[in-house]
Image 1 (cartoon, helix red, strand yellow):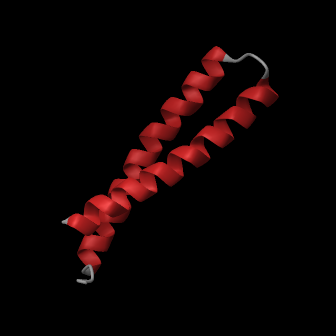
Image 2: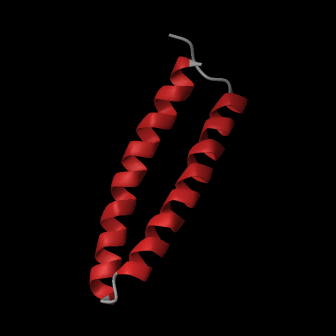
Length: 67
């Protein structure tokens, strides 16, 4: 098993964070447009962003591990 350099770790971190920001913005925007009840909208946004974070983190990690 090969370890990542500091630069590779930095690129992976920025990639994951950038993808996460775009995805979470889209989730939040869509939820707030479609759901008028603020408590329900915040709850769904939190749950969806958590799932998004787990899936994204796993996929980005696997991508960089294969490189």
